[in-house]
Image (cartoon, rainbow, N blue to C red; front, side):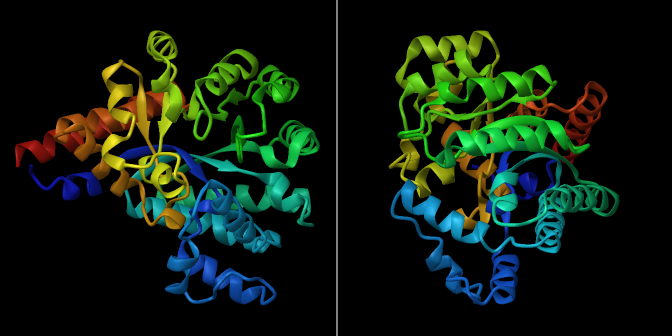
Length: 341
């Protein structure tokens, strides 16, 4: 197969499933750890590679929360957000819906207005400097229960920042049933936010059904177990409900044991609208370009197929109609120019 990495590197892309704190590069994590000397997080970027080696999903959550604890001031929030956009620009990501968990920061003492101002200032500065358009999905940390859900809904709806477009649910799925969060999603949807909960990553397809039926999900975060239920796959395909697939993440958290057996192949074969994403890229030693390379190998894709995959991301996004047309046209122009060489 042709080396597709140069093509992927220049391909304009959208990313729909990527976490705010989980996108902190080793350089930024080390800098934040040095600022906060009481943290157990290593200050040496090279040592972070070992620190970010996970035994299972529960261990990943523990490590993730230790990095969350490094974000203690609005200045930390602003630095993190702006640097994420810089890393995205290097990958030719033009548009990203970044999953932000404000409860994790405000519950640790960051003033809520300061938090909102920090992400918005970084968003506007990043778009001006890097040309990366950022939008927010505020998600409930499921492990923190209904009080976190109530606070996340309040922060989203009462302080609604300009870039906020979606409402989500993250964290562990085992022991955290989706239906209990229905009232909060109902409120968010009524206020015009899109519903994008995680579901079916470490639990079975019934969790995905719950996300669809109870939470009004318009996209599903991960949805790895959907392939266990042919009826569910058919429903997702018929209703054009996208799955936000994160292959390397699934291996790192042991949600999938063998990359060559990743369910993305069955999802595509069933006609489901699949998008490829990086989830928590530095923590998993990946980025979106690498995930496109993984998808190309697993699915046997060429340049045109990869362009179609990029256009899946645009279609599944909540970008406005004109924005979708512009980004789709940019993908087509890039691909045509590449193939004409």
